[in-house]
Image (cartoon, rainbow, N blue to C red; front, side):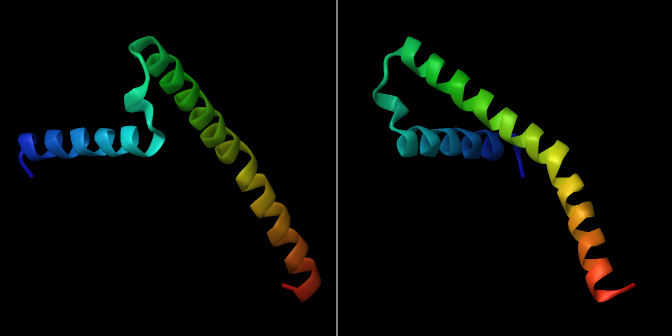
Amino acid sequence: MDVKRVKDYLYWLYYQYQLVTCSYVLEPWEQSMFHTITVTVLAMVVYTAYVFVPIHVRLALEFFSQIFGS
């Protein structure tokens, strides 16, 4: 893929994001606050999944290995 197509695709994704969230109707300062909150919440979800999901998967595997045997 050439750079122009990738750039156009990223612009299209951002446009879709604005349409889905209706953030295109907000004023610039409201958009920046909305995007900041959205990115912060997304970062917290990713961090939480990164930290806690492996622990729960390991505990589930230990639990089921005790029930069904090795």
